[in-house]
Image (cartoon, rainbow, N blue to C red; front, side, top):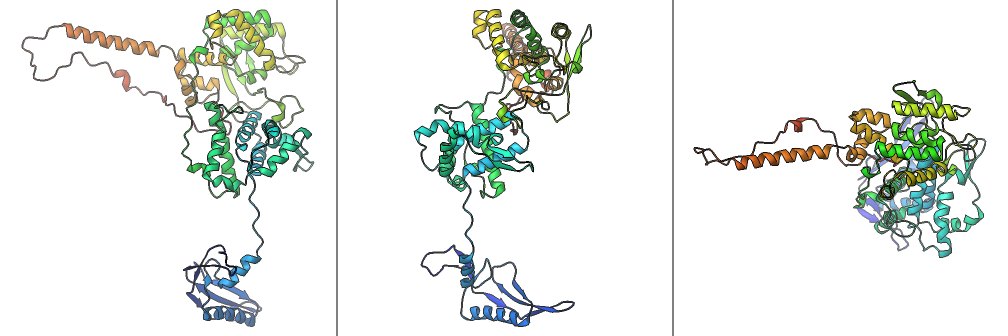
Length: 537
């Protein structure tokens, strides 16, 4: 085989050629009304023969003669096409040039549109935009002017990677790009002109620079480990999308020797309040915002997420006059900027429960203390017209701007100076951690606690293992017992006729019966990353 070149003195795309060509006689293909004729030849190295079909015998003979002439002249044949090399090069020259590769910005924007159409949660959309905005700064072919740099991240997150803001949908459901705001038009135009071709990511230096950008904050300082991992997941999804679309031949991230940073998954046990501290906190809340006492108490006793509290309705509750009650959760309404919603101008819309299918419910028991608190709340404040227990303003949801300041004031009033300076219940969400920790320490089976909290068992073990009290104390007592037994054995004199030829145990073997029980999987290995890289807390 040989490599063929064109006649311009420059190497054309290298082509494998062969001089081993077999030309066969014409083949008549008889039909019902008329026959057609085939000219056939085979070039060594090709998996199949070349076959050209003609309506007349004369046309087929003419083509066969052309092939024979090329063979007799000693002309090489292109193995890829099976044609004489001059003919193959002429076809190549006449073919339209392939379209230029798409830019990174085009691919990333298309990826955002595809994920938006999957109706992901607003928080997931925001995470995708933030991650792509972080990496895009490393994928320009020129340094960005200083006067534009401050606007770039804002424009990327607020426009380029926000499908809802950047596009409008016509009556037929087709999406088209809108005109960007005047404040961003200059920086958007610059980024469009200087975005690298997506194929540049095959360059090891460029893909490493992009990967490094994921690890930095806007001010250049290192990003948190959880942030780096989440960004890398999004970037990896965008690269896979480019491979699927044919923009890249392979995934350049596969060749990087990158190791995910160690992320903080387990809950810090210092944030968990005990019952006495919780009682003081709720009393302080009752003095400042009595309509929110049940709000925080439900997080603490039933482990509800704040977004689930927004959708807590009277018809979901079973509140007996005594004993245990129950709530059957069916919706979640987390607070997030409306610009990531499909209907940014409409009121907040509830979604399915986190990590649950649409229409799926989650039962959670309500202990007698919480039942009494909720009954008192209903007697005092009632519900909204649609049955919701908690509201602010004109029956709207309780926003973070309301319940966070109340909680800060309650902490300052109810906790000692040392407690207030510690991480103890720094956020209302920490009350949820206290609820799950309390269940586990009370002996609730892990599978049951996971069901009530809306977790997987694996995540529950990873997140709350350190909060299960008593394990350290049991282990210390066992060590004390073993040391005491060793001391007792050492103080006793040896029998007079004892055979010292073999080494003797200085104490009895420790009790290993408990070790034969099946232990829960406490591996710190992270779960497979979901489209939404929240660990399900």
